[in-house]
Image (cartoon, rainbow over all chains, first blue to last red; front, side):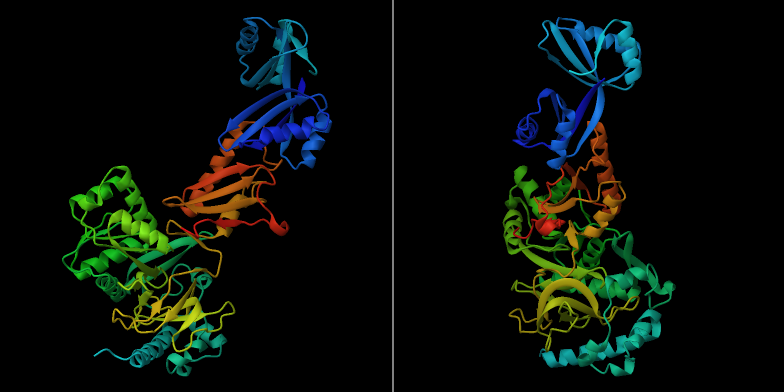
Length: 137
Length: 426
């Protein structure tokens, strides 16, 4: 399981830059990030190398945020990998609420971040199929 | 020969004396209020004694909802109207048969004042129902002998078709709806030459000279302001004449005064500035003594070039309370706050923004605190919809709800400015 911070932001030019400066400008590295928009507002989901510090910085900046747990999966960086993992979950009737993926410094590997409706069961079935679950990224 | 102003004011005084006695005899609450103020009907001998009578407020009407201030037995009441409720309690106004006739007469006079006759075709595009606008103008136009088209509000394309096909000469609706009709005509390439409009009677909202120009140009008519309050009867209390220099209020039906924020009378010999206070002179079912309208304006008995001797009130320049009028609906910021407060974590930081595109629009910005923030977009959208739904239930108005980041609502001197009205310069 991986810790993720979700931040509420207004959907307007420059807001993401300001948010990233709050985090990155204070020496916290954003390892992964997803930006979602819903009309007038947006949501940033991110995983950093120092979540405690990141949250302290967000708190100082007066922003609304929430820490949550998501599933981090290490997968092969090749065609079909994502389909395979999705199938394992769907076979177990687990719903994916959202997901984002990125490649890593490890050669031929990619990381998939998943938010599922049953985290415990997801870990169980993925482990059973030999998929490596990450504790941090 | 016109009666002189002094004669009119003397006869107002006589009607007042009669009305005070009638209210004392028939409405226990009025009697109690007057007793508390140390006034008896005998103390009111003429117009000069009016300041001895205690004020009546909207809160008084609310506390006696729905039948508490009716002066007649219910079997003499033939109609009820009501204004939108504050904190859920509407203001209910009863009418006897004679009240309805008088009301029709006032609206007939208003239509005559703007030049309408029995040869005119009057399209009433105010809402019909509990709201007084539709039926008030309807009865007035019928009494005038004009042909009435009870179009009611809404279905704007059909309204334009009626205007064109039925050769409407006189339009009655809210000023913002008039503007909307003209915008839609422009968008659909309907030329004003194809219409037969001569005049429009627009009220239930405050509007400016700029808006008058836009409406007059867009619909090819002369626009007149009409004033009224549900508490006094509805539309027909005051009307602009062709001088467009204030609204004549019918002196045989109403006494109008002005007061300052402390409630001190500011009008001397009928002239003054401040909050308008009205006393009805002929109402049977619910006479009103010194009703505080909270509308800020001025009054004058100065002779008008049109020849009418009824005193004029100026354009309403504002409100002495924080009530907003949005698309003709009375909205108190406290109503919105009440709705927001019902939802956990929502009501702490919000802002109400009123603007006018064509119609008035009401927007509520709500800061998303940690308490209500969710990682799920669908949950946030559900929250937005829930606030919208609850506001609609409270106000009967569609409100745009926008979730914003904490700190986005300006807090001058640490206190958030709750209401921003951008319509001022419209």
